[in-house]
Length: 357
Image (tube, rainbow, N blue to C red):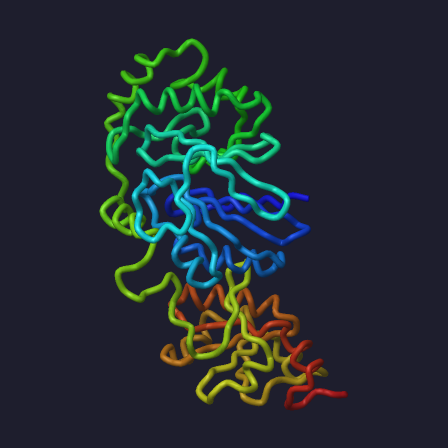
């Protein structure tokens, strides 16, 4: 069975695609974003998947790929068109190459025009294709920089993508209007740049007069992506979280287990966001915890030391997850949720103050 997820980066409007074979647990990520690596890693972990390769559709100009960072953390291959001439690629792709995951595979199609190294990827049963910045929903990628060529793009779309079955679903590299998926039949009929009746010279003339500003991250993204996203320094996408062994959930929350909190060095501020009667109630509370009910947290948090880490706790971990979000918005960078809350804390036999058996 195929596992499929479409993920979104709101800063660059980039779609990242997860494909996995449920039986083997092997997974691919198409067009990962550097800043979203914690999210993607959390999803892979929660679904019990092993990332075997990241695959970029091209050398991006609007965001930095997460390929290198995922390779460092998970040992995944870095797959990219050989024509991209990027350093650090572990699998240079040619037209027709197959990337296998479990019993499934995708095929690489060379679709230049946006860049020389643009590739689209087609699932083995030809039910879905990932068109990167070549063919967008009711549009196309730009052709005015980075080896752009409108004539090559027109031929790429018509000879490669439009030759796929009409019911093949098309998933683009970006969409700036919130559209998520199209189909070959739809784009053949309705794409105003490339659809029915439009000739190559018509398309080239259209693209020559777009007059778009260059992407804001162009000067940073292209050099970084020619290194497959490897930073020039040792900086990573996340805030430093070396004060305790933490995990990052797909919900976007840093979490600490009761055992890790029990063994953590002194200096951590524990904030219990339950109401006072719960704090004093049957579950008891962690001895070092300070009561700050969630509804009063914004005001009471002014008493916290921003230089020291904060762990939020509640009954189950739900309210304290919201507390983490509130504290992050207030400027706290080293803050985590107590996974499972006081229910898990007590179930694992950690010490409490007050409460009943």
